[in-house]
Each structure stands twice: as C-alpha cells, then as structure tokens.
Length: 234
Image (cartoon, rainbow, N blue to C red; front, side, top):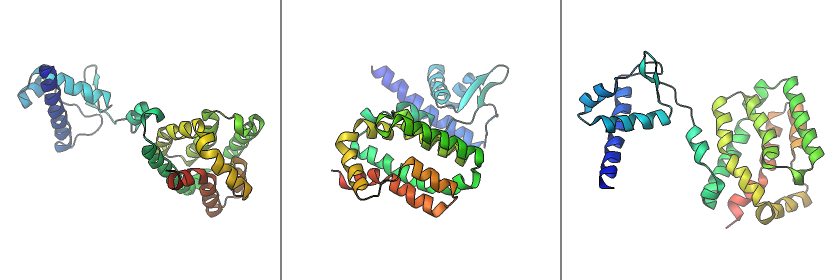
C-alpha cells in the first residue's frame, strides 16, 4: 500500500511537470511531446511513474498517442469529466442550490445569443416540442422531456461550451423531478394561484415576438420555483 501511495504521489508531480513543460514551451494542440524515455531522463524518474502520469493526461483528453507521431497534444473536451461524475445522489442540497443558481444566470444571460441566431426553422422546432409536451401533459413529462425545450434553446444560441454546460445541469432537472412533490409543487401551486407561472408555451410566444427584455423577465419567472427553493428552503 505504501509503495502505491508513493508511486501515485510521484505520478502527481510528474503530471504537473509535463503540464508545466507544455506551458513553458508554448505547445498547442497538434504539437508533439517527448516520448516516455525522454521524460524519464528529463525528470530522473522511473518509466512506470511517467507512464502513469501520461495515462492520466490521456484520460483528461490532453494528449493522444498517434501512429508515427508519438505523443501529441490535443484540445481537451471541456466539462466532459464533470458530466461523467455528476449524480444528484452524490451532491449535497447546497451544491444542488449552487447549480440551480448557475442555471438561472445562464438561462437569462443566453438571451442575446438566442435572439441573434433564431430563425423560422428554429421557431418551428420549438413549436413541435411545445405541442408534444402539451399532448403528454406537464405532470407526465420525464426528465428528458423537461430538458428538451431548454436544450433546443442552448443549441439555437450556437455556443458549444454553453451547450456542454447545459448537460452538466442534468442533475438539477433530476433532483427537481424526483423531489417535485416535496419541494417544488407547493411553490408552483402558489405561483399558479397568483398568476405568476410562466410555461414553455409562454416563453415560445415571447420568442416569436423577438422581445429580449420580456423574454429575460419571463425566463426568470419560469425558473422562479428554483429561486424560491434556493432562498427559502432550509
């Protein structure tokens, strides 16, 4: 056990050294790195430790081994690692709240991108999504059904990083769906009684009118149950 811990600690250091080597030499995706034995000589460490450090960098998507090229730097897939490990069962209520807050900021802030890119074909797609959701009924929607409208909004906005970030928000939808009766239904019923509920059809109507400010205000209203949960649930 002690040997494994030492090897792991050394691999951590070598991993950092390789990343520092990349930065210091201003290497970019497509550039080649030294091979294993060159790193062994460079760092004065065993080949097994270098191999483990390189394996970690491959898992991060920072390097690849290519035929006739050796070890090559690649552009890492942003946020993919987070997406793989995030599970609402592994997250505390406070972390869920933080993620909900980030989603509110993102959904409202994306409006400029949305209205700059949207066209009639996008409107038609949103209409089809909303029609299907209305046919299913709000209480019968699955997590994926809930996601599809907002996912399309992100796609129309045309920012790949934001689309990836939306996938990280999946645990928020899962949590809200699984805890709807306990946490969110009372909030939604209160908002409905006050005429403050904003639905997907409401948002679609505003999008058709191309009014950014009204859309941002409506989106804030649409996500009001999250807001209430963040600040009023203890």
